[in-house]
Image (cartoon, rainbow, N blue to C red; front, side, top):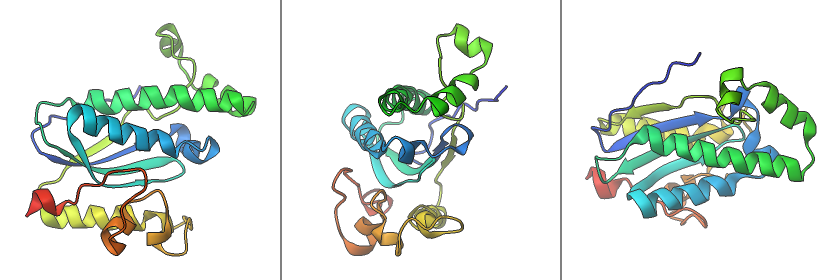
Length: 190
């Protein structure tokens, strides 16, 4: 059983990561990058949560989010996002008639999850959230997020600024992202 951490929202800026079930490349398999884009717009509109930086990898997402209101429930916001994205993943897999993958995700559900109505497991049960206390930590996470697509096993672009599902070009080349309103971290940190 996964242990869930309650993230007390006492800091404004957070480094957040959530992962697809079993590290399967759900975002690429279902061409679902748009789900993250829509969600980032929703949390900005509804909760005034600003996207400072992001990268959507094939099987996970890294975010630097700034909560302008400290009364938000970070756990609920991320859990709801994962739940609603899971519905869209499953719908897209059904449209693709990817029954092999649907069976894998269905078999991953426990009996308890099935009793609650969950039919497929699209994401790992928890997420990682670290409050950002210092500029050094913020810079470290910005660097990590932006270079993730070209680091280690990932060779998703020739240059990190070329990867389309990232905020790297916003910071490095002063190019707005076509689908995500990125709030410059310097607006809050200086």
